[in-house]
Image 1 (cartoon, helix red, strand yellow):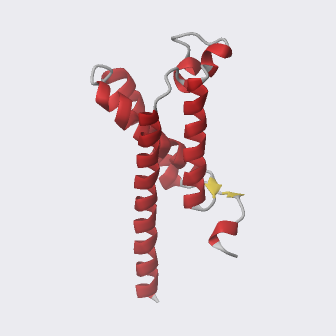
Image 2: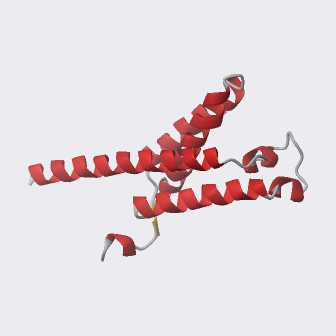
Length: 141
């Protein structure tokens, strides 16, 4: 079966769960402790959010990593375009609501660029991790 046609299955992954928790703590710290450092909140937070979504999904799903990253990027872009149409306000959320913050309220092409950077960086880490594991496996045989 080709890599693109792997079946989706459920299997818990501790390393990905721990990564998701660490990135979540980093996101909370950025939002609560560094609101005055706008470039960290605006850019690093957006790069990390796709890593968080990827790690959280990968912690329970056994799926092709690159297809999952593509799905995460599309999802992040959909949320960003929902901000363009003011979805949070249309759903009745007001500033200060958790869902208002999660959905967001300001569309930015820069955010989409940050999501792309986060997905590409994660894809590179996955590629190099898989390459190292493959080399170690070949050397062990």
